[in-house]
Length: 128
Image (cartoon, rainbow, N blue to C red; front, side, top):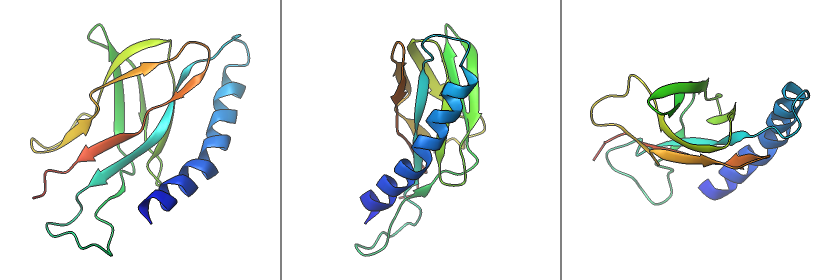
């Protein structure tokens, strides 16, 4: 069920977001960047089989760093999706203001050359 929700969310927003990125980068020959969905969980201390224990991480500020400097930042939508224009290469990804028990995974992402790559992220809430 969660996979279906993710697929629907990604499919419905992916096309619109990618179009917007390419329209923004119309002056450049090969725009590059990342898009994806950020989910957070667990959302409850006790997860039941029939209930989802994950939710979109809406309004989360993502920062993409290279060589210790923030190169771009973006907030996730209400459905947890994001789209960011970045130069090709590896970036550390983080979110300022997370509580000590929260962790964003993966901590590093790779932007492909000449296209918008996919990097789904997971915010571990630390709830046990």
